[in-house]
Image 1 (cartoon, rainbow, N blue to C red):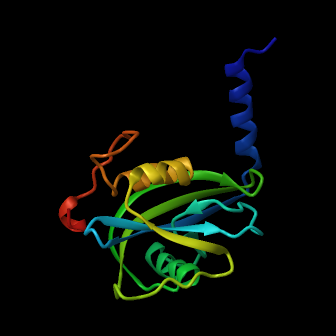
Image 2 (cartoon, rainbow, N blue to C red):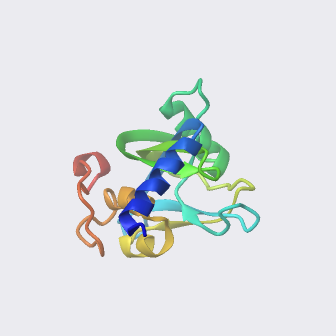
Length: 176
């Protein structure tokens, strides 16, 4: 009888054999000051007809092979939210497997601000709701695990429910 570790290692080995495509993804943590002068970030919810229906996330999307990460980020944010953004700095990256194990994506996350703070969010068909969130506790309840880690490096770093490694982003750059 195989032990759990051997079964898991076999699973990982088989998963690597299924991957046939590698894609870069750009993600945007869009930062703005709310009415209480706290930093808040934009979360958008996938539509009920989407494969990942009703999942809250920050704007992100796949890059074409001809696009650099920054151009991809600005295009995806514009498509999904109608916003123009300026990149403040690179935050982090993580990998995930998608498309039934056939695609490995590397998501590159950037801290951004709106080019014009008076812009209004205009969601595409991919998303049905948005909210500006200023509490890392609310983020912990809404977004997938890897996104939580990225957001926690920016939002309420001293009020976190969970403390992830390397959570500090240069505070001078984001105004704290």
